Image (spheres, helix red, strand yellow):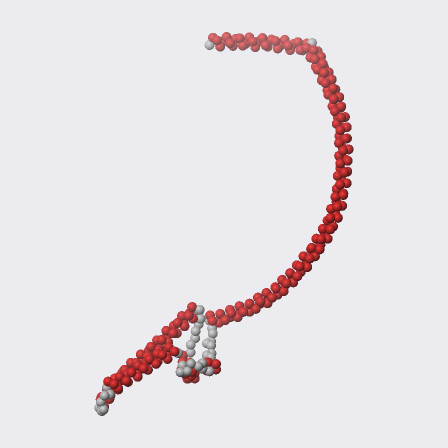
Length: 282
């Protein structure tokens, strides 16, 4: 509004200057003919027409650039904008804008009361991406409420669990104390039983050791006796072998076998001599 108001003021000053220039440059005579008046008005019309046309074109282009910025921002957010051209000629809304401008740009710097009671523009019909964003926001808000409720429930459960843990720790400490006393009593009783067991084992070990000593002596005596018997048997066996060999040598079979072995030995010696002779001749 300030920008448009400033541009409009500059153009109005330009139009005023056109009339002022005309008055100073052309209206210096007291009387004018009809042709002269027509010429002056035509020249003024051309100048004013050019200024007004330039202002209207500039205003339209300025609005296009402003809308382009808004549309570019909406495009980045994937928003779908809708406009109603008929609302641009709504006389009631135009009068509201005029009242707003009049109240906003008064000569005084006081805050106008119209800011409090001025009506707000109704929102456009939402759809497309904007509608999806609103639904997503509502869904997230509902989910946030559910999470808050769940968090509160979990906090209550955690508090109850901590209290239960404290009770269990206290009960465990009491139980450990009771078990410690019982362990001391059990340890003393076990120690006494262990001492008795050690004494019994020691007595049995000494008894077993004595028995083993006596058995060892008996085994040593038996071993010596067995050795003597073994030597006596070996001696008897040696005598029996000699006697058997003597008897065998006196038999006819032994004598025949001995004669045969003697003849074979003589034949082998003779064959060796012949073989040696033939080898020397070669």
